[in-house]
Length: 255
Image 1 (cartoon, rainbow, N blue to C red):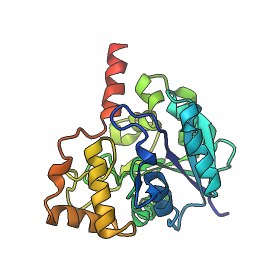
Image 2: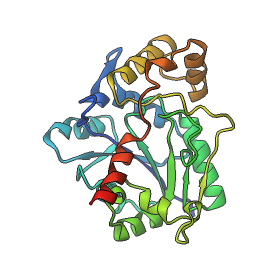
Image 3: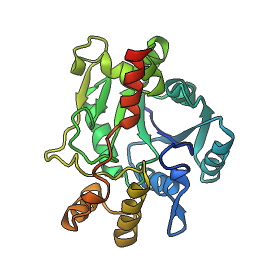
């Protein structure tokens, strides 16, 4: 029987550092639409769901996703694990792919590679970011729906609720756990100094520059090579990677 793979991309307008970032436009097209247009080229995804919040200002994300022909779900802003689970629980999915919409240049071929690796080895969880060698903004997580459901049923830490996969990661054999079988999809070279995600205005400046110079259809490596060849890393390389998760982890220990 054919296994069903659903990709969920998280999207919201609320951002302290760059409000409305996914709605910002380059050449008249929003970063959200550029992101979805790229991931829709994946050959291993059966469906895309845009998971946004119930905040009034996020109605535009929900409405746009529907207008563009994709499913969308509105749920909790704070409990992202619940929002994510509710978005897919009735879809009869076997595999879930998690990405975020502040990564407009996410590579669909990389998506396919990580999905194929995960499914061929029957892992419960795979990420290409457990070891951070890919550029920030090319992050892909693939996991079984059964792992997501177990996380939804058992997660209690703030970091496990404010983010989707920490419970799975914490309880997988890649972190010494015994519940899940996990693996990292590695990059042969370390490009962790490259940022293609959008958290701050200078991130947007770099993405805008890349799109204006190269368009929206290049591979992640072509964008990376361009950034390095033109010494563009200094535009945004001082920004901390995964700052939101770091803040949540601090709440775990302080709470």
